[in-house]
Structures are given as C-alpha cells and as structure tokens.
Picture 1 (cartoon, one colour):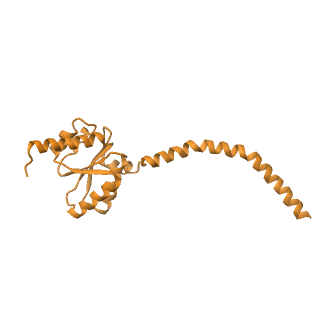
Picture 2 (cartoon, rainbow, N blue to C red):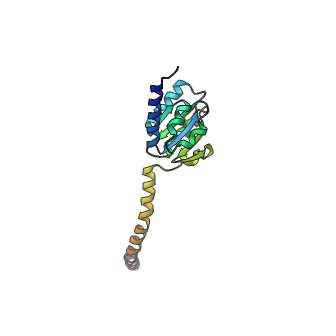
Picture 3 (cartoon, rainbow, N blue to C red):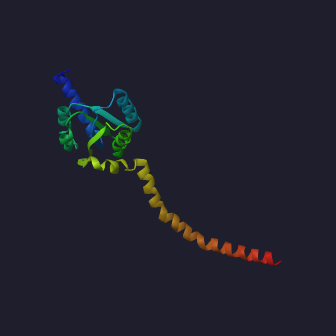
Length: 176
C-alpha cells in the first residue's frame, strides 16, 4: 500500500521524536515471526517500557539523520523492527535477548547506545547492564561500606570489653 507524502512526513517526525528521547535503539530482523508472537513481543515491550516500531527503512534513515542514531542507517536492510528505550539503555537489549531465546526467528542486527554503534555480539553485555534502580543501589552500598566499617571499628573496643567481662563472669560462675 502506497503512503502519501503527508503520511510519510508524519511517520518520520514521529520516529525522529521517539529517537531523540531514547537512550538506546536496537534493530532486529523479524522475518518468520507470527502475528501472535509479535503481539506477545509488543505486550512484553509495554511491560518493560520499550517502544517498538516497524517502519520502512528509507523513512527510518531519514528520521535518524538528525539524531544520535544515524549510525544505524547501514543496519536498516530488509524487514527491521526498531526497539526504543527511553528510561534505561539495557531495556531494549534485555527484551530482545530474552525474546530471541524463545523465538529464534528474531535476529538482532545492530544496537546503538547514545551515538555509538555496537555489534550484535555486544547484546548480552548491554542486556546485563543494571537498571537505574539497581545501579543506584550498588552505588549506595559502595558509598555506605566505609561508614559502616568505621562505625564497627568504633564499636569494637566497647564490645571487646563487654565480652571480656562476660568471660570473667562465666569463669567465676563455673568455679563456684
């Protein structure tokens, strides 16, 4: 079905605004995926905060021209599913990696974080990136560790004195 010029412009504008808000984009070949499987993928994407788009490659290239994802233009060959993550960069990679395990027809072509193009072999590395909340929790535990150790060090002389007195008490009770 032929698209009119106005429809094409609106699609390009929509994809461009989506790309400008996104932290990462993954391009995947979706040949061989049934419509029920695609519906399942879209439902999983909604749950994980990922937006999926299937756009003609020429329109996607034009939309990516003024964004950080212009490096993906070379990967836009054949039927391509574009997954956009606005909140956490690893969400798209995690979604498509997990989905590809159950559906081998989905093949990731390329992924981009920021303005860098990554090979599809880096999918697992990007998917294992912690979410924002996980990263903050890790940072807080690292920041809290020295303070906790300092508090334990300050508390130890008093605890040692209490243990010594308790040992003397137990020794006197056992002798009596």
